[in-house]
Length: 230
Image (cartoon, rainbow, N blue to C red; front, side, top):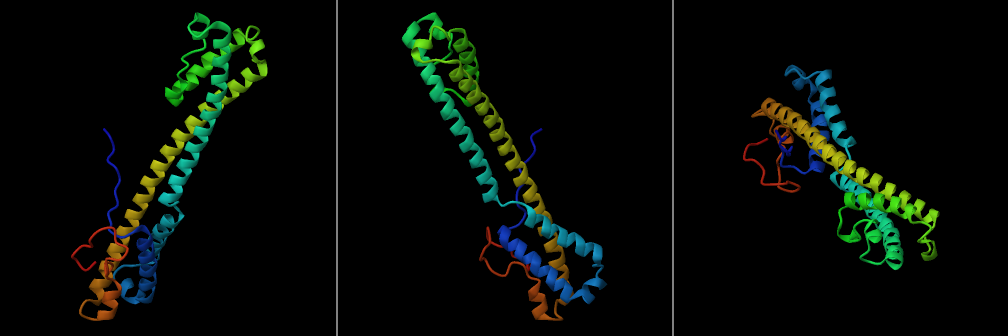
């Protein structure tokens, strides 16, 4: 069964949520006598501050996307280098054996620009063994054992880059999911203690009550704020 995508439970931007958490921690320290009476203790403060720190330690969505883009660029560069070498060897084989010969076809499908990354690696493996087989016959066209070795190295580099890109995307998705879960946990604590603060000072101290109201303005909100005071 496919796991449902994790979504944010809050309407604040991530940066404002962290700011509100910092403010809440300071407010509770200020009103520690009242909060202690409501069961707030060192362990609960540690839970709250740890939740805030965990969110701070996660890379941002922009950082995670940048990592993925860098891996994609590396993969694309590896593919470009491999394609260049493969085209040269295809041309050598065409010049010696002819475009429609059986020997030319031994080098694999020449339509490399239309192939997937995985397919071009497969064709490069075919080409490397075939190039070694016909090395002496293609020597006059400039094929050398060093060029075959370069082809193999470039093929392996692309193969590794494909895996790295796939892992990078997977890591990004997992990190994004974990980050949202950490943000949601922090938000739940924020709402809990903001609600306690409002309850403590309701009709007792309006200024302090307002300190614990989270959605005071629509600035930096993701969506329209809820109608409740929290």
